[in-house]
Length: 137
Image 1 (tube, helix red, strand yellow):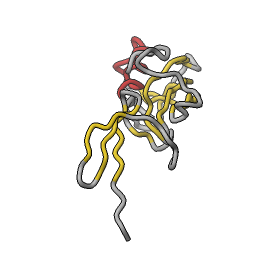
Image 2 (cartoon, rainbow, N blue to C red):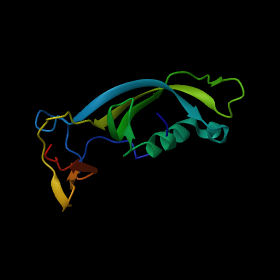
Image 3 (cartoon, helix red, strand yellow):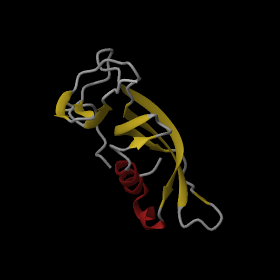
Image 4 (cartoon, rainbow, N blue to C red):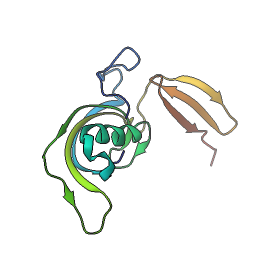
């Protein structure tokens, strides 16, 4: 997971996860962030930039699309340099708001386009969703 959407709390543009919007999940993550030595003067800003670059992209390990993050914590004053890697590894913890709907789950979205082979939607005012039309077998 690489990669700032500004840190913050859920605002009016982003509904808080609830039973009605169960496609949104808060996930607590612990991992080592790869950070360029250029960011060593301000490690927190460098990590925030990397995290932000990862927002609004599907992430297989999260099983969804990270929408925002908060509660960033750098877990050590020390970083690891591994072999000949041109980066340092900084251990962090962060809380991510992830859009991760399940197959068959009902949710509300705005229809953007009805194509001949798909339906294009906008979920939560942020995430593009494409649903292919089923073909008769």
